[in-house]
Length: 463
Image 1 (cartoon, rainbow, N blue to C red):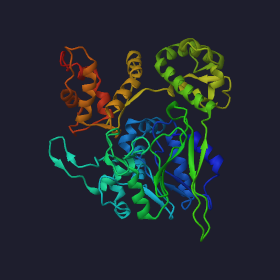
Image 2 (tube, rainbow, N blue to C red; image 1 turned 180 degrees about the vertical axis):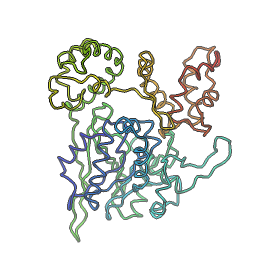
Image 3 (cartoon, rainbow, N blue to C red; image 1 turned 90 degrees about the vertical axis):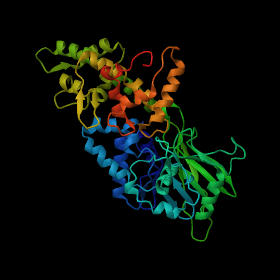
Image 4 (cartoon, one colour; image 1 turned 135 degrees about the vertical axis):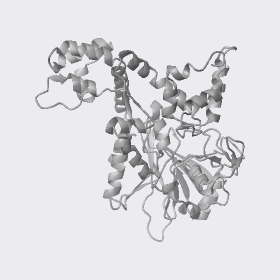
């Protein structure tokens, strides 16, 4: 969703076309505020220049993940149609899992297949991608919720490894070169030593593996794997979650026939401070307007009387008073109120402005509930971020769903902080949230569970 970074890359590297090829390595959506625009631009360029634009799938090109980390909300806010989201999912599953660049590089979102030792590039190519909707399928064999031993299909394990895994830095963990283990940090994919990178580079006769998936402060980071092989991590989103990191991309210079291939060249760019601050401030402004929408509605209607409009000066004055901010709102008129209509340069249409700031609950069946009541709207919006934070904390593998084990882990953490006579019964909480009895709790079920009629059934001291 980093539109500004995407535009900056095109400014620096030029637009795609014959002689200027681009490969985008997944995670086009989520967390940023312009995921729809980024994805639309990339798909349009793919249609315009099919031989010059290539798109690998990342772990966030997954509808379940998108429901938990922002993309679903953005699509619904911009299109008011869940069918658009479903259609995007059909595009995600058709994206390649990796790309082999001549005899120079294997480019994959997170890592090479790890959990199945005999996996090769031919196994990757044989995967029916359209059937792999979820990128998290438990790549390691193990026991399921019923205690039965399950052997995971090789193809699904390969997908999870390639989109969720992380390398082990031998500088930080000496002797880890040949280690392959479960990725307990993400609760998805694997952790792999650089020896596996050497093996895949040798098997494919390439110089390096290029991945993304992790934020690196310098934008681009090289990990030496021995025997002249390298693992590059490329992260093009600058100032990621206000961390101040640089963004970057990797350039593979053209090579002449008969000559050795030039080494890839990293290109680094710094975050545009003014733009990142503007985006952050705008998000906070939208939060304030939504939180105070009932009070703003009353003030605007009182000022407008029988008219549908108020003057720009009155609009500015009311926003200052209700939001208690000394800000020149007239300067931000286009950002907050939309394009100026013909003949409305000094006027604000009250209904149009208020309509831009809606608080909705999206049910798992696709229906929308618009919260109009003053108290309900304030309560819902004031807890929106807290509920999102709790869900993300419990969703240890970031797949956009909660398993019983994840809920148990979250409840154990909470129980450690609660007074001695109060305990949360994790199984009871999970059963209340899992309304469709699927064995997993999605975002909709989680939010719906925090209604008074559901949570009141959890009695003290067991909660």
